[in-house]
Image (tube, rainbow, N blue to C red; front, top):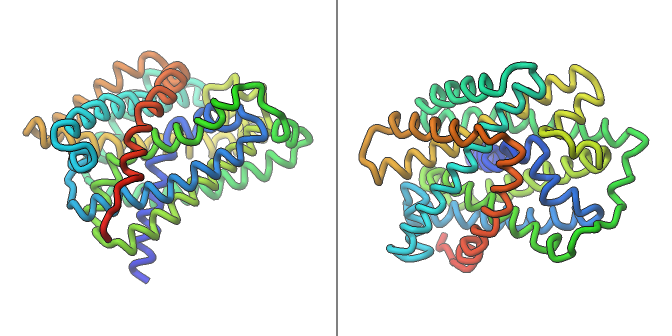
Length: 344
């Protein structure tokens, strides 16, 4: 029973790490799946397979290697010298991703709370720093609380949305986009999110160090991510194309249903963005601590300040420009981790 409870915790951290600013806001789902019309569900199914398969591999390899950070894993995959350069590239990418997370929080404050964008950035940075003082236990605890709420409320939101008379219009629409773009989309999405998630999955796999728990957690987490992708796709499809104008489209859907649903969902979106930001900054701090040999709190503050500066470009532009590019850069990593055979 304890192993099942631990597996569920692993699954929730896995989901919470992937379901960040782009996902929870609806921007990612729209970019990689919904805009392809009736191809969306099939593309989501392909991504789900990768989340289960590669998510398990990352954690099992981390446990086998007793990796302290994702650089140890990359050295194993690419070799000592190349692994350092790959880790450096991923450090830059993760900084960009965390800037998107912070910008997403700022957009929530400005678009849905009638507060300034800068207030959202500063409040989120401060809360992130305070929680990170508690370490991995805080990450496990906050995801155990937030992720089930997000799954339940997303399901409710989809059911309410699909009761609207326009529900089926976009779901049967044939995409005017290139079929090659659709074919590549689930690979880009899975490669990007899994390579970024290793900042959290590697120390998690090392800390748990139980193959049964890790495999089960990967299955539960991967399927949970697939369910949330499909739920988000159905809700967005019901409101396309007008909903594409929102920086936080899922918040716009909640607002179209009722004011109280809007406030609850906006809070949950913020919490999901926050959990991913906390987890990624934690992973980056561990990574840089081994290189810089300085206080982790100084590193954390420096990382948050860099994200604050990058966040000045805004949420929508950052996500649209960075995520597909990072997905392409992550395809090589996806191939190598898929080819590697961890020993349980």
